[in-house]
Image 1 (cartoon, rainbow, N blue to C red):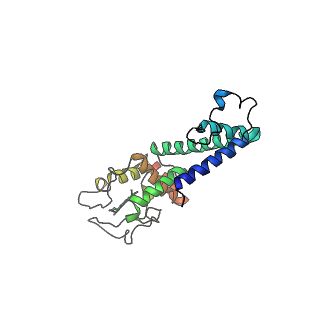
Image 2 (cartoon, rainbow, N blue to C red):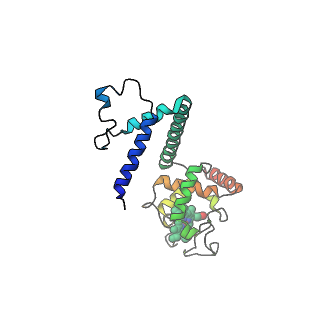
Image 3 (tube, rainbow, N blue to C red):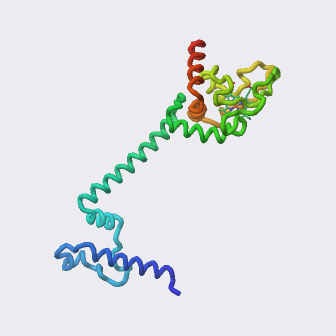
Length: 219
Ligand code: HEC
């Protein structure tokens, strides 16, 4: 059995030999004593190992003008994609409002909703049965958030406050509101993302009613 390390080295030096064979040698190089030294030595340890620049340079040289153009286009494309992703994350992290037409913000909100809200309000936002019953002392089950319940009476700012501070501060002291506060768990931008996701599930008439209600309240 061959030692895998030796095998790898053999394979590598064969690859290097093939590579050297394919790169045309400029005339005069072989008789340049300084540059030629050790070039064809059998012992790998003495041979100059091709550095990254050397290999990359060789590849770029062999590409030709068309290939170089394509390679540059691929690199620029990748940079633009990376920039886009970075910008998307940056704007998500600094959001100060909910835009349900912004797919990136809605996407972030969706995953945060699944982590923090779906347990009570349901993965499909339908809440728990009995939410529209009579609960004078509180303890109402989680409401649907997709528009079935009259959620439109809350402006975006109201929704933000209920999620950040919980339901209790906005209820009479005798009423037990079981909507928890997320101040400690979610950044403001995360809360806006969740609102964007929730609103992306509303039918058009719920959007209209929310706008009308907000205009009435002058907020
Ligand atoms: C532990 C269960 C629970 C979790 C988790 C929870 N909620 Fe609630 N939520 C409730 C309950 C219960 C109510 C109803 C409170 C009431 O009316 O007495 C409520 C009410 C609300 C309301 C007010 C709806 C209205 O019309 O008044 C909003 C908005 C809301 N939740 C959003 C969220 C969001 C967004 C999350 C995730 C960040 C979340 N909730 C997580 C239990 C929960």
